[in-house]
Length: 512
Image 1: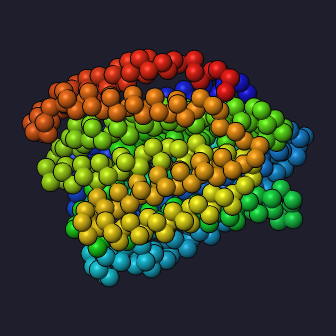
Image 2 (image 1 turned 90 degrees about the vertical axis):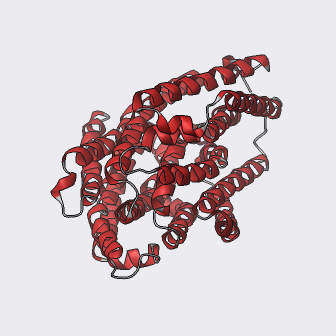
Image 3 (image 1 turned 180 degrees about the vertical axis):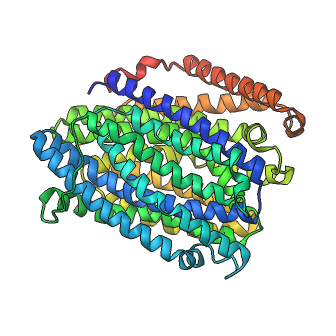
């Protein structure tokens, strides 16, 4: 696949993902407005986070990393073999997910006891969290099958459908918050049911598109199939690697449950803002690159593989650096515009602002991990990212112990940022050690120019940006207008400085 085609797919995927993320902000605005920051929202965010973590470990994490390279091998074979392989995979995955879901539902109180020990046992918050977890846990079954279907569709170049799927979860949240929040004695329970409905709707949405590519999923349990064992063999170390990152997030939840009430919610809102560029840019790059890198490796086309990796590194840097600086500089306007309404207070604004600033330092690392890790996965080398992830886990927890006493919940966010940056640097160092891979001559100078352009953009915005009080007194329409104005100004400044230092868009279409 040519880089022109990859760029078109990237823009298509990112464009649809932006729609989903904007709806995600709308959903979080309604949650902040109607539910605020409280014991109940802390309980919900813990209950929502746990199945999300397991989803990332199983389907979107370890499974995808092991499944896509193996799927690429089958795509160059007979179509019957491909469909038989897919049937066996989806059958086995369904059985495993069903078992995990039942364990989660019946073991909810024990799971809460482990994941949020700061919630006093049998207290109102503890009981509520367990009830919410029982409602949200089936989400892991639905969304993991959705992730597998999405991986198949992506491998066939159908990137738009998986990118659009999360829209249904956001719509489910929005409708639930607006129309059904008074249906329960504890209003936050409707959010848990929105998670359940959102996962089911995504599965229903994707199924017809799976049929369109010629695959009709059928029951076929065959544990002796070589393809199944190849995926499972790759999944072993992948589960360890992905679990390390999710364990780090889970430990953060444990720490946050002991901190001031509202800490879980403040971190959630800050994380949601950071996930916008990480999801639109990082996930898009990873999703598009992995099948293309896997196909190049399967065909033993080393020249194309090297060119694609170098190009990906440049593209990752040119989008992640201004995103990180922009998030940090515009953090107060962003939080004020999206969340400062109804039950969300000025104190919540300041606390979320601190967390977002801390998170922004690691955004470049988070996006570059999405660029660099697929290089190893495509080569079926999962051990290297796993070793790096384990090392990062220990560093992150050491940073937690050092930073929490000084920065409280913001210390947890800063530790994540330091860990992500360290992880990306180790991945880059390991990439350079691959004998068949060479960093192109112009890449270091290119990165320097991008960093300079990003810093000049940030400095320019800081010089003209109003004070924090300006954003808290404005009505909604004015906040949106001025946020868009300063965001647009930042984009203009960034591209002007890129042109001044000699970077042109055709850099990405040029041979490395």
